[in-house]
Length: 476
Image (tube, rainbow, N blue to C red; front, side, top):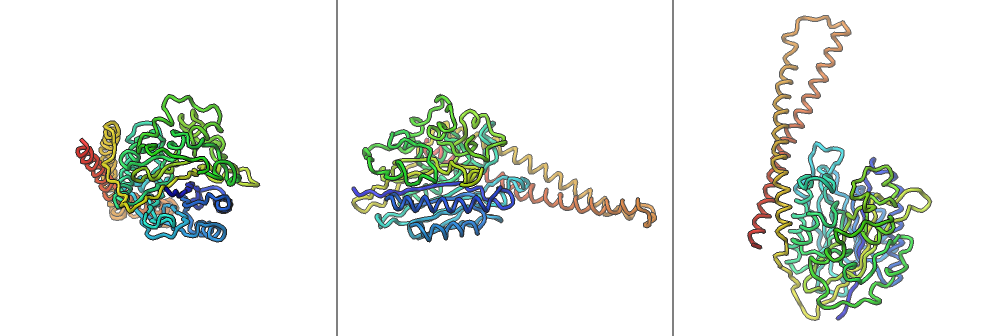
């Protein structure tokens, strides 16, 4: 059987304007490093097929990277995905012509009151492109890039991560729909979730997705090691298929995780070991942007967290992971800071072309366990009344603001005649005008956050619960 190597890379660039430190310098350096890596890989016979970026919010940064890759590498096609008021910062660079592209904003993205996080305004979601590799002219591959909601962390009640669970459910359904159309799927991005979290379990089980990092480790096809952009042409990345052979029944859909990373594994002793044994991509002591940052107990124990993934799905074992590496672990040359607050993931998937026409569809109902169902549904059920109460409190505040506004506007009619030349009187008038403006603004904000967003959130959570219940009944 003829094989095709699909080399993929994902990186969260941390490229928010005015917020991310040294954004322009770092994004330029990321563009240079990606170009060097892709050029070296192309010369060494292991060219990149796809690069997915998250938090590349400035279109000018995307254009700069695109021009660099287009001039010097085989990644001559690209798509920047527009969502929300500010954009989700998602982009894909492809070695193959883009036949179709889609953008889906998630229904839930935090609250509009959380201006600091900004997820509601950027409209986080997922973007995808559909390509057809030259070596497989009859096989479509849909490549997704996504960035999940960050709020909720990785500890505490699962209900804190209800929006992230809704993201996972939405994306798993998109992936299932794509697969049922006969497409192979690659899903890359920053999922803001630990490997054993309910979010990742839901994605793997309902989406029938395999994790490139875990699969490569579980079957010993390649030993993941720390891998930097400066040595792109060295080591196992140089020839991922040189010693590669795959048994026909090698890859289960959702079973690799248990064999590759166990809950009772001892924590790594060094940050370098954490890269090779856990594949950590965030909150690593090796990342300059982790210094002074408040990190969770889990990240402290494991010397970082694995939040970035390359997931994939194809029928009949036709897509398999050959290797996986952590990349962008070094500092930007000539500086004392890292490329981003995340490391990247570089993986090679091996596609075995079918010998005859096959629609490739994979309509398995999935393998969601009862524990995953219970955990997801219970978490969203806990979050639902909290969302409802929050919306009601905001509407009560709106009512109080209306009463306060009426009092402020009617005050001049019942206040005795005063001396307008007095500084004290002028100060009172100014405070009255300022209070009127603040009450009007805050009351209006409470109205749209409590009524429009509040109802939106409650209905989206209810819809997710219902869909999970229907699916559970179908599998039962």
